[in-house]
Image 1 (cartoon, rainbow, N blue to C red):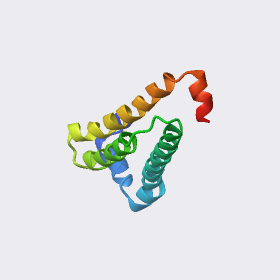
Image 2: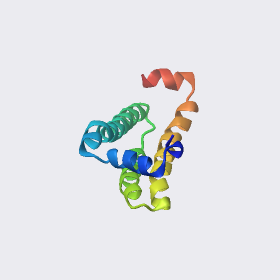
Image 3: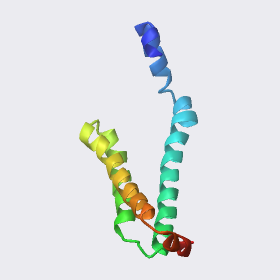
Image 4: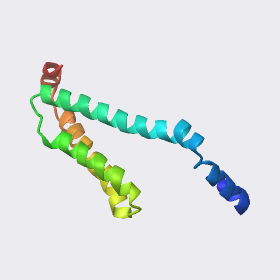
Length: 112
């Protein structure tokens, strides 16, 4: 959409996105909601994973490290650090997903 605007108008739109009302009303709730949702999902998965008897300390640590690297890496404008956090989160949640997929019906029903 920005490609169709003249440069001056596109700069004005981008400048408006950095006004305090836009940050407080739109950007901040999205960021807080994303991180809060990620924390709640991590807690729920850690509890369910612990109840199934397969829990390790690596999962909460992986989520914490992934979130911190994502938060600080993205602010550093470094591509490697910016991508490392989501990759760590993907590996942590992916490993839990693979473990859940490998559970048979008996293990799955006893975990609930």
